[in-house]
Length: 582
Image 1 (cartoon, one colour):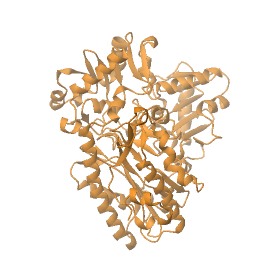
Image 2 (tube, rainbow, N blue to C red):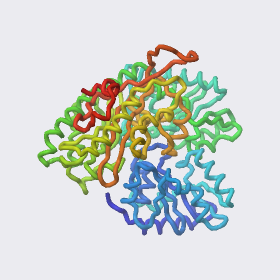
Image 3 (cartoon, helix red, strand yellow):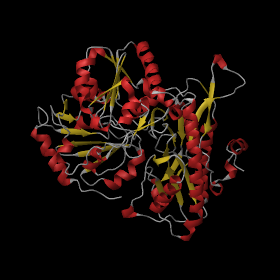
């Protein structure tokens, strides 16, 4: 990983901040979040503003630049990576550690009295904006909208926004037509007493319209908004993308508008009527509706419907995982043969796993950049191998591969940790404790109404007994030929400000697909993670206390666990039987 010299870029940015060209007042600070106008987790290259200004390339983090200092907040998945990529201009703020201040607290401690802080209102969610605004105003500061993004003003050769080809998803894959989805949605709107619903999340728009594209690498989505009324449906997208095929797919039920006309449309049609918005929508979008007419919820009705897969989608996810298992079993067999010869690198290994997947029917792309890491790099939780600093996969080190794919009928995400020589007893002990946690979550039976965070400790308890832990969530939702990280469902205990408030409110229900991925990492030595996608389903129990239903999980991933990594003396008979370890 390379460190980027940000000195000149920060100097240019501070001059723009002081000029007050894009605000009514000179700015003493700006906030640069890791998001686009749709609050996406993964971004198109044109939206990698935080990465450009800081040099830190992880997917999660927020940069704050004052006239004198620059700081970056990120979570435990990226501590090592940020330490390697940030230059001396930056202070690393490790989120989740007790001594790390919040962004608002830090700003209030370093800013001169009566300072103005700028944010692009399209890149900051409404909930984040309100929290920051209140905190700053209590200390006599002001949060201001910038009329243009300030980072864009100093970013030479910024990539242009992508506009990839749109493709349709047929009913035999989606399970429902667009019209059926809209009818269901309008029933939810009636129940909630609203006239309009605004959708800003890209995967929600793609799911609703049964369309896909590849505007963001690995994520089959396209840049668009949607506004649904009782008697009309509106799609906001650059109109040169609408081919005759797409017109026929949308039919006359959908009116297509230019992408950039979303704010004027909201102001003219929705601002004075009850309008349903997610608090994760941008401040710019939410502000277009008069406050007394806003009906806001943490998540939109589409996100909740989408994360509960219908029978057709469940079948598609099963088929996709079966195909992926074939590719991965071939891949790990190849690794077992080739690594001892000394000819495999982290990059060539990742390329080979892609090659095997490309041979499977329905393969579209990877679902994220393959994490192919040997020995010390395995301890970097979201490590991605780099051709400029390619490293050998060594037979005497642990190898961690976290990878997934997009198929026409489903999305996969699987991690296996292997050793191609003889693992140490310590490595086996750590691996087996991770495996025990993985089995505990995969086999749990729980009552309806349970939230994901209720179950998180199951995956950690055997590590905790040895005084060990890991700095990431235990599970996230997985889309159906959509984003590999799908909200709002998840299994977290508080390590991510982006997802925890949402996942904490969501009941686990049959049809949801979440990952089970406990791990353990020793900085500079190795990393261990075991991950399967799990399908939530109804459990058959002897009793139903208080008339409740009980649920359990079914693993969708069919890739073996490496036997040599297991210390069988640490496993119970039930664990061996539950996970068919023979």
